[in-house]
Amino acid sequence: MSAARVWAVTMRVLRQMRHDVRLIAIMLVVPSLAMILFGFSFSGDIRGVRLAVIDEDRTDLTAEIIDSLKGDPTFRVTELPPGQDPEKLLLSGYQAVVRLPDKFTSLYYAHFAMGVATEAHGTLHLWLDESDPQIAAAVRAGVAEALMDIGEGGPVEIEEHPLYGVEVRFIDSFAPAIMGYVVTFICSLLTLLSVVREKVDGTFERLWISPLRRGEFILGYVIAFGMVALVQSGLILGLGKLVFDIVINGSVFWALVCIILFAVGNVGLGTFLSALAQTESQAILLFPLVVLPSVLLSGMMWPLQAIPPVLRPLAYLVPLTYGNRLLRAVMVKGLAPWQEPVGLAGVLGFLVLTVALASVSLRATARE
Amino acid sequence: MEAAVEVQGAVKSFGLVRAVDGVDLRVFRGEIYGLVGPSGAGKTTLIRMICGLLGRDAGEVRVLGHPIPEGKRHVEGRLGYMPQERALYRDLTVEENLLFFGQLNGMPRGEIRDRIAEILEFMRLSHLAVHLAGNLSGGEKQRLSLACALLSKPELLVLDEPTVGLDPALRQEFWEHFHELKDEGHTILLTTHYLEEAGRCSRVGFMRAGRLQVEGLPAELQARVAQAVGGTPSMEEVFLFFARKGVE
Ligand SMILES: Nc1ncnc2c1ncn2[C@@H]1O[C@H](COP(=O)(O)OP(=O)(O)OP(=O)(O)O)[C@@H](O)[C@H]1O
Ligand SMILES: [Mg+2]
Image 1 (tube, chains in turn blue, yellow):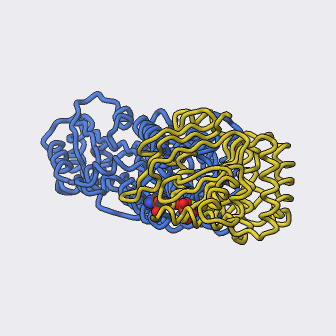
Image 2: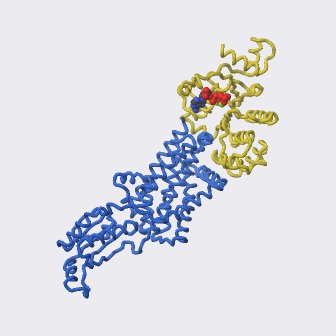
Image 3: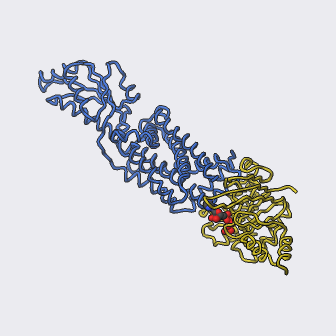
C-alpha cells in the first residue's frame, strides 16, 4: 500500500470532476433539491408499531382498553408485567410504551360520580420514541382511538413522556434520510460510471500494468468520494438549518463519521456493480437497482411499518435502511453510533461486504 | 542473449476464432522487435497476453525473467504499455494525464514536472498542456498516449501501433527516439502496419492467422525473398510474399 499512489488516484478522480462543471453543478443541486422537494410530508398507513403495555390496575376497564389497542392494526401489542422501566423498554426495541397505573379505573369512575367539577381523572402514561414523527403521530392517534372505544370517551389524561426531550418534526428526521440517500446516489453511481469508463476507454489496462494495487485503487476512490459526501452533507445540513430550521439533537461530528462510513460502503457497491456492466449504457441501466430500493424500502420516505409485511424482509437487505437508522439515531436521538448497534452493524457490514466484493470484481475485470 | 520477453506455445481463442494459435516468441534485451501482419492476425491479442491483460488457453509467458501472471508484481512499473486504443482520461488535461501515470509509477514529484515538460516538448504537445485529452485530434491523442507509456522510461516498452496516424516527419523523429532508447538499453516490442518501419527494427516477425510465420533480421528476410523471386524486394514485397505463402 503506497500513500502516494492512493493519493494519485484520489486527486485524479477529483480533477476529473473539476473539469466537468456540469457534474459539479449536479452534485450540488441534487442534494439541495432532494432536501427541499422531499421536505414535504409523506404518509402511508402505519402498521405493526411495537407497543408495550403495562397494566398495573388489572380491571375490566383496562382490559377493554388493551383489547382495543390489540384490535388496532397500527400496533403489535406486547403485555408486560408491572415494574419495568419504560425508557429501557424503548431502548430495547419497543417504539412506544403505555402504562395504565394503579387506581386508573377508580379515578376514571370517580370523575363520573363526582361530576365535572372534580379534578379526578384517570391518567394513561405514554412513552414515545419521537425520532420518527410519523410513527409518533400514529401512536398518539391509535391510543386516543382506543380510549374513545371505551364508551363515554371519558376524560382520561394522557401524560406523554417523550424520550428525547424535544419535539421532533418530520423535517428534523428527514435531514439524515436525505443525507443517506444523496450519499448512496452520488457515491455508488458515480463510482460505477467512473470504473466502467476506465474499462471502456482502456485506461484500466494501464492501471493494471502499473504498480497500483486494487486496495489502493479502491481507497483512492473512497477518499475522493468521502470528500464529496462531506461537502454534500454539509450542504444538506446548512440548507436544512437555513430553510427549515431543523433541529440537530446529536453530534454533527458523529453524524459526519457515520456518513463517511456509509459513503465507503457505497463506493464499494459502485465498484462491485461495475463488474456487471461492460458499457456506460449498461451501467446507467443498473441505476434503478440502487435507487429504487433505497427510496421505497429504506424507511426514508415512510417508516418500515408502512411497508407491506411481505416486502418488509426486503427492507432489511437495503443498505440505506441501516444508514438511515444510524444517522437518525445519531442526529435526532443524539445517541453515539454504538448505541444504535443494529444500524451501526448494518453500515459496517455493508462496508466490509462491498469492499471485499469490489476487490474480487476488480480482479475479475482485470483479467478476462 | 537474455530474453526480455519469452513466449512458448501461446494459444488464445475467442469462441471459434483462434486469435493466437501456438506462438513462440523471444524478444532479447536491447532490441527493437517489430510484429507485422495483416489486420486480425492476432498481434494485439499476443501483446495483451504478454502484458498479462489476457488469460491464455495454453502456453507460457515470461517477461523480464518472471512468469506471467504469477510474477506480475516484479514486472509492474518496469513495463510501459501503449494500447492500440488511446486509453486516456478524456476528462483530464494532457498534463494531468501524464502526472497521474507518473505518480502511479512512483516517480518523485519534482522529477515528474521536468520529465512532463521534456516529453511534451518532444511530442510537440507543450502548447496543449492544459487542454482536455478528450478534445485532442487523433494524432495528438496518439502522441499523448505514447508519452504516457514513455514517461517513466521503463526497461521494456510494449507499443501497439505507436506510429499509426502520424505524419512522416514525426514518424521519422519517433524512430530516432526509439533507437536512442534502444541504445540506452531499453527493449521495445511494437506492432506496425508501415512496412518501411519493419526495416528499421532489429528483428521482425510476420504474424498471420494467429501464427508467427517467419522471423529474422529485416535484411535476412529480404534476402530470402530475393532468392525466391529475384530482384531487390522492398519490405512491402517481403510482406506480400509471406502473406501469400500462408494462403497456399
Ligand atoms: N475480446 C475479443 N473478443 C472476441 N474476439 C476477439 C477479441 N479480441 C480479438 N478478437 C479477434 O481475434 C482476432 C485477432 O485480433 P487482434 O486484435 O489480435 O488482431 P491484430 O493483429 O491486432 O489486428 P490489427 O492489425 O487490425 O490491430 C480477430 O479476429 C479479432 O476479431
Ligand atoms: Mg491490433
